[in-house]
Image (cartoon, rainbow, N blue to C red):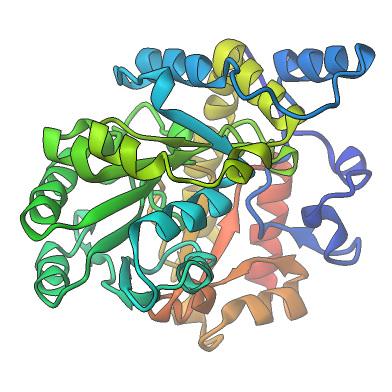
Length: 379
């Protein structure tokens, strides 16, 4: 089915963060909210819940695990046990609460910058200390620094917070990298928490591999945290999943406080079930629109900003732009906002490798994307 982004005059009626953080003359291409209308199955499920006044607490036994298992099986061939799916508020809460079960206060936790900025805060919130092992960037693309990870494990680190597909670069980690990581983790007694929230947005020319599927070792020591929030634009409805695949991690997370699951939003649960169960035709339409935009961005930059570095992502609607050739300093998003009235996510927020970079959200209409690049070029 065809899915197109809403026009600007409708978008500016929204009251979410994306549309209320800047004046009306700014094109907001920063936070990871998309501009597409809600999928009809999600709209219908939420409207039906309102009509029946279904606004109470979430039921302790519900259909979200089964809905996600069906989606994961169809999309990735991943056989998820619905009994090993727990829900909570959002992916960030899922990460913090899982970390609290797996680390002791003061333990160091590996992250791989440039990476989703809240990772730098979620680790200390759970009592840990951030230890950065940056991604490697080469001619053929991005990869995990397996040697750096092994050195970290040898130094005593016992947990990795992985982002797969990786935000902000849109890289689904290869099965080879994930298998190697799982082997190292098993060898050194390391647990891996894999944030896979962008996985449903993987393009046809890329491959997403769920971490828990790469080996028995990964299933034994790994945890997946995910949500329908990014793919179906449901972040404000507050519902995420914590998924395990082995008995050891199931037992570890059985000790999670009951409140972790009680914090799930009823509307988020209802919307997530509808998305995973009935939202794939809409998702495929969105992916077709996003695929056009990621390719369009290449053409726009080549024509108007040829010095800007950009690798089309394999997943998601976020573009990691190397703006160092413009001479706009460590945080070029400041200049983009001031001179071009385009709001981008500041590169330094993603860690030291983000200096001179910015993240652009192309989950918008082709017209908005073209206008944003034109403004940046004029600046």
